[in-house]
Length: 440
Picture 1 (cartoon, rainbow, N blue to C red):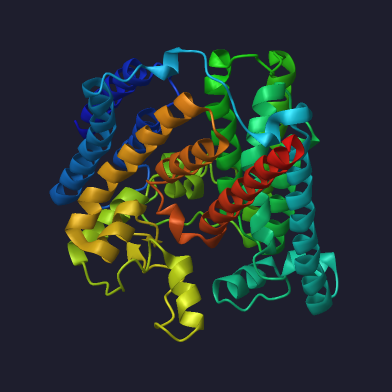
Picture 2: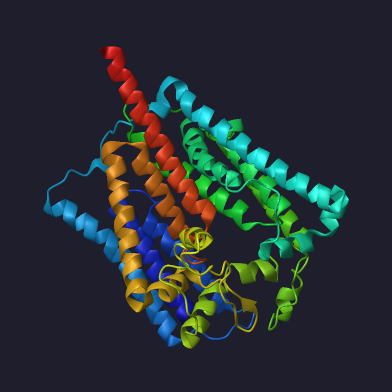
């Protein structure tokens, strides 16, 4: 019954979102697909999960209403003030980065990618010095993974590996305009892949790929409405390049999983599901990864035994920075886990919000998140400025991963956003001053 209800509500909301935003790829669609996938997969119970409590289902529903209401608030406000629906009109994209065939944008993509590759080189050099050879590194991958979890993996200059995440946003823009996969499309992602494999991590690879895809799809959304169109149409090359890119990401994720050592002995796994144990991306481990979070939240909300500082999970990088100056206690990098009956510590963004801000924060933030996303959606269509697009893209990524966790708890996510905003704003201000001086 719950699967049927979730499916009906999801289909209705997706169609409704297309009517509201005139595009299939919008934030209501994205939130609905993400949560419907987790809830439906969980309720299928190919692993015999605990039942989600009635309280948890009620919270999922209320926060979902908050997401829809946040979008409608902006839409109603636009109607009240008789603002023209710019998403249906021709718009002008404005940024110094787009001039001269995207010369500055391409330079930035190469620059941040090379810095990321240098950071990856530092990480691999550290591992080679510590373990002696690539073979030894592969054999001790699980140990390296444990060292990273414990914060004992050193070797790279802090924060350099974050810059390629800013690059993937720009790569998405460039790929959307050129309709083909090029070196500028994949270079930042390659540097992320090489760096994450060194730390036996896959979260950064997955998020980087989603950031690239989100930027591409959002920019592709507006191109038919752009005046003086500067993009090309080459769908065959784009599809073929996309297949190669997806294969690169899936291959990297599979490699990391094999290096860690695949765990398939889940409690309560059905016999019919056991035959997929050796098949990547359809085995129990992947099913658990893409279904368990809603159940973990239910278990968390039942216990409510966590004691965190205000904003500790939501703004973890800021708390970590303050702790280095002795202003606050050092926060926990990894949240508490729960058995459902298998252990997991990922419990959706609602756990982070509730632990940090209580019931009010958990219920208010989804509304605010949707309101801001809708605001920047129409602001970008109205202004065509790159800053609005970057804000919109990062908000979309938060929504994409809301069923996993609160992405702002990741340093690479929060810092890459701030670096990208500051960097682009500085370039645009400098270019305007330079233009004024030349006119005089």
